[in-house]
Amino acid sequence: MKTLILLRHAKSSWKQPELHDHDRPLNKRGKKEAPKVGWYLKENDLVPDLILASTARRAQETARAVAEESGFEKGIDLHQDLYLSDTASYLDILRCLPDEAQRVLVVGHNPDLEEFLSLLTDVTTHLTTAALAQIDLPVSSWDELNEATDGRLVNIWSPREK
Image (cartoon, rainbow, N blue to C red):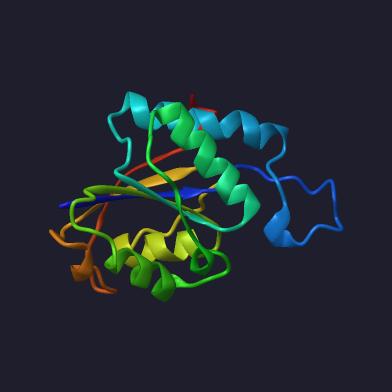
């Protein structure tokens, strides 16, 4: 059994409209909420073995804050294919992960995360900024993951619940 944690990036800033979407930073609320996600992971024994993040600035900033607060000490793997992608890209990236990784956190964007959550669990829901979804996957190896995998949604959590 593998655990996948999907995390929508924290709230981003729109104060600089000249910035390309990919380059938007976190806003004040995002900078406050992202570390709360790390706290939640640590408190609930969910610190990941690997963190994957979109190359978008807001996703990277979210991932770094989560890593720092949770005590995650490894590097964060950045993937361009997690920015404006689709469920096939998520599957392709995850299928290449080492099997030693039991718990993986993916920091990405909507609607991609919501669609991926629905594909894996048949649950359709809205993920607010900085919300995470914990999914148990009935696979022993990441390369077994596919469109027909019947994952179980364990929990959805948002920093606003803290």
